[in-house]
Amino acid sequence: MATEENETLTERAKSRGGQGVQGQAGGLDGLLREVRRQASRGGEPDVRHVLDWLHRQTGAHVALITDESGTVESSTAGFPREALRPLAPLLARLSGGQLAAAATQTEALHVRCEALGPHEPRPLLVVASRSEPTPQEIALTSHTGSLLTLLHRAEASDRNWHGYQYKARQLRFAVLHALMAGGPVLARRMTTGAVPPLLDAGRLRVHLLHCPSSDRDRIARAHQDPSGYHGPDLMVHCPVFKEHLICLIADDATAGGFGGQERGQGEILRRLVRDNPRYALGISGAHPLSATAAAYGQAAHALAAARTTPGRVAFYHGRTPLEGVLPRQPALDWSRALLRPLDSVPKTSADITRLAMNMPRSAVARLLSLSRNTVTAHLRRTQRALGLDLADVRCRAAVHLALALSSSCADPEPGDHQLPFTLDDLLRNESAAAWARTILRPLQARHRRTLQAWIDANTDAQEAARRMAISRNTVRSHLRTAEAVLGLDLLTTGTGIHDVVHALHITNARAV
Image 1 (cartoon, rainbow, N blue to C red):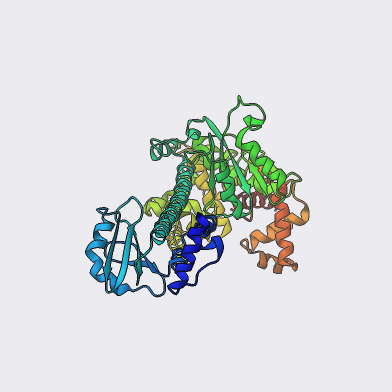
Image 2: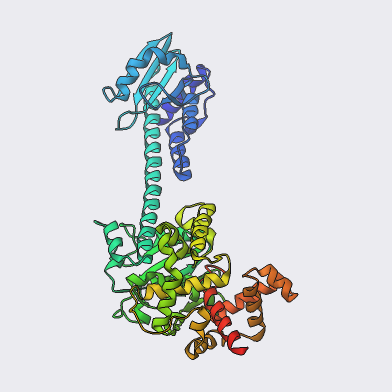
C-alpha cells in the first residue's frame, strides 16, 4: 500500500511540473531520511531543503511563515508571496491558536495553511498550487509540517542545552571568583537554592590541569552532575589561560590516600594525565576555603614543575613565604607606609592593581572583561599615587610583598621600634638570607646567570639574550628549566617572579 501511494505521489508531481523522485525516496522514506540527516547535523534546521523536497513531491509551492503578520522565514523559489496579503486575517487566527489548519482559494490558487507547534505565535506552513491537492498530498504536507516542528524543537532543545552549559560554567566561575576573593559566605549567597557541596567542605586542594583548550569542555561535561557542579568538587574553565582547567577538590582526610585523593575527581585527573602525553597537573596543598587564592598560586607553581617531571604530575612542596620570615612589626609598618597612598585611589583601581601583581595586564583584562587600555589606566592612577613605576619588575615585587604582608595581618599592633626606611633595611637579616639560599639552591650557575640577566632586563627575554650574547630561545629554555627546579611559575602567570627578584636581591646584597 505504501508503495502504491509513493508511485501515485510521484506521478502526480510529474504531471504538475515537479521533478519527482524515484522509488521510496519520493515518499515518507525520503522524509525520514531528511529527519535523520538534519538531526545528525545539529544546529538550525535546513527549512529550505525540506520545502524544496515537498515541492518536488507535490508540484506545489511552499512557504514557512513565522508570525501572524506574514513574515516569510523560507520558501520555494516560485512561491507567490502576493497571495498572502488577502489571507492576513486567516493567518492571524492560525498563528494565534484559534485554528489548527485551513484551506481556501485566492487568485486562482488553492491554498492550505497548517499551524505548527503548541506555542503562540505559531509558525505556519502555507502550500499554494493551481489545482486542488489530493488527500495523499495533504497527508504528505501534514507530515512535512510535523517534521519541521520536530526539527525546530530539536534545535530549540539544543540551543537551550548550550545555554544551560554556558550559564552553569559562568556560575562555577562566579563561585571560584568569590572563593579567590576569600568569600565562602558570598559564594553561598550567590548560589542560594543550589549551593555546591564544595562549600560545605572544611578544606580544599586546587588541581590545575594543563590540556588542549578543545578538551576542557569535554572533560568538564563528562563529570558534570545535573546541578551543573561536579559532585563535591568544581571544574572551572580558566578565563585567562585557555589551556587550564581549574579543579577545586574537597579535601577529605578520612577518604584515604594522599589527603583523600585516591578517590574521586583527583584520581580521574591523574588518570587523564597518565593517558595523555600533552597533559600536566599541578596540585596544591590543603587550604581552608577562604584561602583558595593561595591554593591556586601553589597549584600554578606545581604545574610549572609538572611539565618536566616524568609523570607530569607535581604536588606543591610547601616553603615558607618571604613575608613569613621577616620581622613582623617592622615588616607590617613598612607595608602600611608603602600602601597608604592606595587609600586615595578608587577601590576598583586598587583591586585591579592587586590582580596585576599576580598576572600579566592582558590576563587581568580578560579576567575582568575590560580592555587592556582600561586596565592600564587604572594602573597608571595607582602608580601615580604610590610614586612607583609598576612596569618595573622590582617595583612590582616590592608592591606584591607589601600586599602579602597587609593581607596577612590587617591591623598591625603599634610598636616602639624604629621604622625601616627602605626595603633593603627590612631584608638585611639572616632569616631573609636563609630564605633566599633555600629558593636559589637548586639552580645551576648558568641558569642563575640567565635569571639574573632576565630580571636585569625587566623580564625582556630578547634584551636578556642580547646582553648575554645568546639566542632568545636559549634564554627561554633556561627559564623553563629554572621553573622546573625551583617549582615556581615564571612564564605563565608569573607569580614566581617576585620570589626570584627578592632572592637574587638578598644574595647579591650580601655578596657585596
